[in-house]
Length: 389
Image (cartoon, rainbow, N blue to C red; front, side):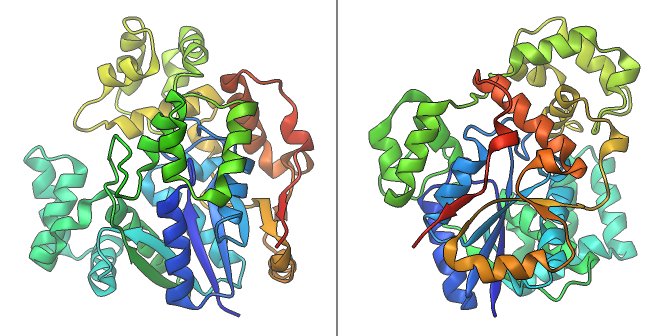
């Protein structure tokens, strides 16, 4: 059988994601599509707006066949390890034949050459990268300049958000020596668009804003009709807004000592002192990040570090590769594939409460519910979403 994997956040699922699922199936001829999706916290270091099971249901209603949860230890990581976690799970299942991802370019040959430059750099590339850093460029800018020097003008756009993540997926395939075939899908929407536009596919950030404003006509224009009921239920039950855990974060920083903060992933070279100094002068998370960030320490890196601090996660707690995945949901007709995946030997389970490996995932779910103002304990009872034809 042909099985296409997709790594995503779907926070929330929208028409651009539906398009990707449709084109991925068309381009690969997939019998099944398996999504590996972030759980309660996302790669940007913030709580997801919608709970994981609601996002999984939206995807299942619009083209996905099985949705697995990417463990917290990889969902809240820099792009390299976010990608490695998702790719490793798909690789370990033993049945995934293709990996599809959205990208600002669908030139696979160019992407693979760039990935090889990054994963197995030659001396000239490394020298160009170090020279860029020596000129004061950010790492992303220095890497982009080195790629352009190695591959020519065609590499100009490879520092765009989805292209950069695509390179991480391809590097992961190389690192794992995986036979999975990459399938880029050309992106045709503005990744950073702040507002919904009637004639364009939405950005997830614009859609989150519309949901929080209660702009239901705008939301309905951006979300597939089949996914709207799950979204409406999730909104009625309770969302975790971006500032839902700000008070908890301030309390964490009030009690934290510098040596403890220094053990948070992403914190080194005295960054803990900048964080503590800024914490005493700011009243919310966004202002804190603005006060701490520098050219070297990006907003994303600081945001993830603060998330790890809230979670009580230290550098030593992050494993090199995933050792489990949670089954968030599946379509009835995908049961044969699910049985095959469960026979692969890679640990899959339906509820974190039943597996010690999922302690961080369980803690993340409960923390999310605190931010949403909901009672604790739901994760112990939540079963996978099952969608019938």
